[in-house]
Amino acid sequence: MEQFIPARPLLTNELRDPELSNLIAQKMAMIHGLNIPISKEPSWLWGTMDRWMANIQENLRKVSLQDPKQKEIVQRLIDYNLEDELQWLKKFLPQIQSPVVFSHNDLQEGNILIRPECEIADEKLVLIDFEYCSYNYRGFDLANHFCEWSYNYNVDSYPNFMHQSEDLPSEEEMLHFIRTYVETLRREYQMNFTEEDEDFLRTSPLFNEEHIVKEVQAFTLASHFFWSLWAVVNAQVSKIPFGYWEYGVCRLENYFSHKKALGV
Image 1 (cartoon, rainbow, N blue to C red):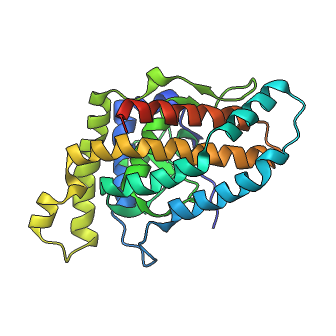
Image 2: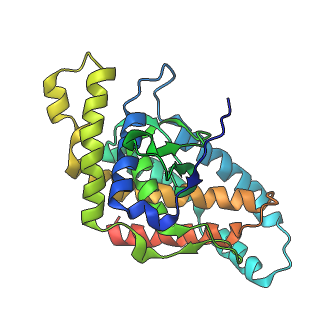
Image 3: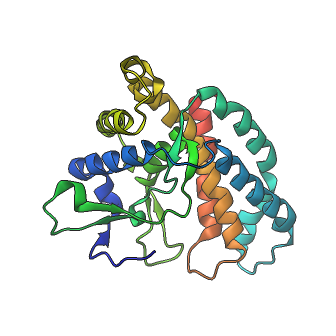
């Protein structure tokens, strides 16, 4: 099904606008509060990365490039032991006990449309591009969205993206988002999971701010690693003018930097 929506995508710097961030938190919580009649195992994340990793292991050494900078990037990617890192993630992330919910998995500014003339708050933003939707660890969806605050894809010159780590949300901005998210999620669970009692709504990690922050910190690793693999796979086949090689190594460097900061 397709529909024309008279709207425009958000700009990267609009993700931190308090009003819009509130609305995004509400929309995300509404998705996470759905009870979809499909498998609720978090197999999408690992299955997708396993497929991409197999592609990379088979094809990366065969890549033929003329650009010396891109050749250097490919060699750096080969020198990283990506397979070992993936196996480590598979052991580390489940320990965080992030609840499994129905997730968007790609909530970046290009997939959030705004209707500037709309005066009804609930209808001002429209989420699109549900290609990656699945049941997944909730921490991935949240961490991935916060990571996107620092990536601007509206760049005309190559490599057609810009990363600025200083644009990541502050603790205050993150908590502002999380509190709105929790409030909405609790309401959605009351409507869609009527078997859950008040004690669950009060004590479950689903609604615990401190636990959510812990999930975000850990699953930031998954976001960086996931999109680095995505970029390397697409760099070999995509005709879209985008610096896939540069993006892949940028996300991977941020992965290792964040891993070091976490001390894990």
